[in-house]
Every structure is written in C-alpha cells, then in structure tokens.
Length: 408
Image 1 (cartoon, helix red, strand yellow):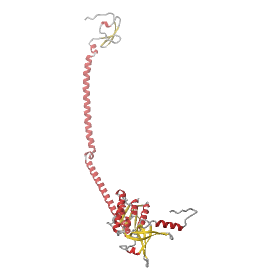
Image 2 (cartoon, helix red, strand yellow):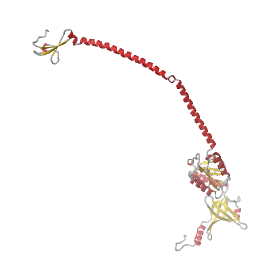
Image 3 (cartoon, one colour):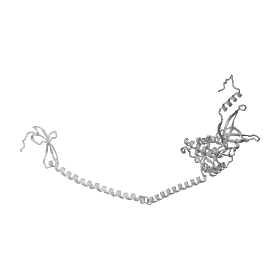
Image 4 (cartoon, one colour):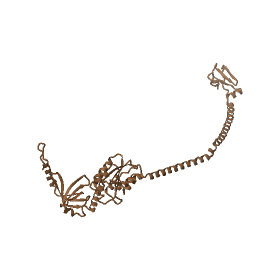
C-alpha cells in the first residue's frame, strides 16, 4: 500500500526505506543479464561478491553468491564475462542500497552470444537501420576527421600514420575511449555524440584492432548500433579484421576492413591526386595542341587557295566580267534605241499618211462650226451661220448665204 504522507505528517527515512524494501521483496527471484565488472572472493569466507554492470548504461548492481555457485561455473568466471544470474533482490534499508542474492550463475558462451547478435541483427534489419539507401557518401577531403579509438592503441597509430602519409595536412579530433570491457559502450557512444555535435568534423572513424568475439561484443551492442545509425555525420567502421563483422559495420555508412583501410577511405592520396592532376593537365595540353595543329593546317590550306594567295585576282576577273556586261548593256540599249527610232519613223510616216493635214496639203479644207464640229452636209448649217474653214496653211472665216443640196 502507498504511504500516507503530508507536509504535516511526513514519513521518516527509515519508514521509506522499509517500504522500498517491501516493494522490492515482492519481485521474487528474477533472471538478470549483465557483464562482470568486478569479481571478489574474500579469504576465509564462502561468499563471493560480483559487480554486475549493464554495458549500455552507467549502472551496476552488487551481487552476492555462495562460493560453490561461483565454482560451478564453467569455464571459470573472469571479469568482463557476460553472465545470466538467478537472484533475489534485497534492499538493505539501513544503508539504502540494493543488491542481488544469487543462487545460480550461468556464463553466456560464444555460441549464445552469436545467437543473440544474430537475433538483434534481424530485428534491426527489419527496422531498416542497415538499408543501403541510408548510407551517405564520404566527403572528398574532410576538414576534420573524428577518430574514436583506444588509448595509445595500434588502431590509432594506423589511422593517424596512414592518413597523414596520404594527406599531410589532414586534421584529427581524437576521442580516446575504452574499446572493450564494461564501460566501452557508454564511452564510445559519448565520444560519437561529441564528435557528431562538432560542426567542423566531416567524418567519424570508429577504429579498433582485432580480438575475440567477447572483445568485439561492445560494437554489436544495440545502443551503440542505434547511435551510429542516427549520427548526422558519416561514420566509417574499422573494427577488427576482414573476417570480423560486428553490427556497427552494418549500421555505418562505410565499412573498412582494417584501421589502415579506413585511413585510405577517408582521405585521398596526395601523390595519386597530384599524378591525376598531371595526367589531366597533359590530356588538356594534348587536346589544345591537337586543336591548334588542326587550326594551323586549316589556315595553311586557306592561305594556299588562289583567292587568298592573290586577292586581286578575283577582283580582276570580276572587273573584266563587269566590263563585258557593261558593253553588252550598251550594245543592247543602242540596238533597242535604233530599232525604236526606225519604228518611230515608220509610225510617223503612217500617221502623216493618215493625218488630215496631209489631206489639206493636197488642196482640201475642213469646214467647222463655231463649236468645233465638222460640217459634213449642207443641212448641218443654217443661213447666216458663221463657219471656220481650215486650210493647209491657215484658216478662213465664212458666212453661209445659201444652201445647196447634195449632188448624190
């Protein structure tokens, strides 16, 4: 039952501690999994003391068990081993501490560890944490490389030495952590998150040398795998040797077979890039020279043509053609004018032959009334009417004084 307390009636510490002990006692015996962080057997006693630690959290519990229970574990238990303990929680209310009283301890063997890793791999695969589309490309030349490795380890030396040999100006942000044991997961995750928050770090390398399945176990821990998958900065995993494939390798953006291979992947080789630039420059120079040679040959061919060898030659040809055309035009115009003149003379002769003036010159006259109409019959005029008589060389005026009928 819950404690009945108030500001006026608070519960003493001993009462609260006793209540916690009662609640914990109701748990009964339970199975607990953890990693042995410390193992102590005091001489002269039959009791062994274990510190059981959660690799994914900064949390540990004290475990007590009879010495015979510890002696029954095969192979002999050592610090760093993964175990399953059947124990009953106990609360020491006078000290306010929790401990486990174990009556059975089972060491998790390599086969069981691999089976658990395989089950975790299947679960994380189903969640999509290892999907290829989540992988990000590495930058060509990172500003700063974050390196998470063991303190003074061979992996650290391999990454730094090979990277600087390939690109001497490379910069590192180094995080030295425990890469095996009870605190490895927590330290690696903290270092990874620290580097991920650094805006200058463009890629993070997790590096560790080879080891046994138990040594590499932290890099298959679910907490670390999820931290790598959620990192905003591309991660290169270089854990163990070629045949070692912890789950971190599957979650990382790039898997390197060794720490040396990781150094080759994160920075380019200055010698190779220099050679590549030289070869590219040679190809460009060759392409430019081929273009210049082609243009030079084209210019030589153009200069050898008559039109460019003697530019006035074409003008002279065109001048001669223009002179001939002009003469032809003149002859054509002259011929047309001459023919037109003959035609005009013919037309003039015909007009003259048909002109009334020619008739008048033969002694005929044209009689017209005052309105200009020609008198053709005597009936066209009246007595006393004035008429105009046109002759070949002039005109006469006349007055009608009588009429005469047509002799016809």
